Length: 120
Image 1: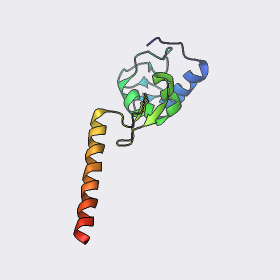
Image 2 (image 1 turned 180 degrees about the vertical axis):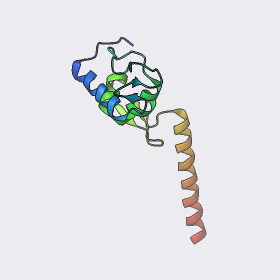
Image 3 (image 1 turned 90 degrees about the vertical axis):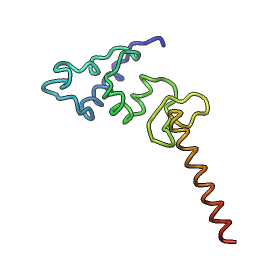
Image 4 (image 1 turned 135 degrees about the vertical axis):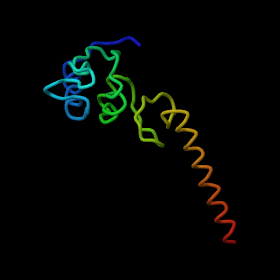
């Protein structure tokens, strides 16, 4: 993926998201695990490496910021609720969610069938 330089308004959105929602960030000390400056606040390109905590816990909170890093259309997983970049007709973020959702659908269909059969 070819990285592009982030625009000023995109950097501002990322900085606000980090300051408001990141549990590892403190205004006075910066990034607590790194014991220094948060590199998500200084990120310059959309293909830059991301902080794992930011990627897993903070980024899904804002679809606009997620579009900056993943590009394209962002969709919400129908099973677990995580956001993922949509390509094609995918409705689930992973094969695991697809498998679990399919199991639930089959279970519900069997329950309805048995319930209807037992009534008659």
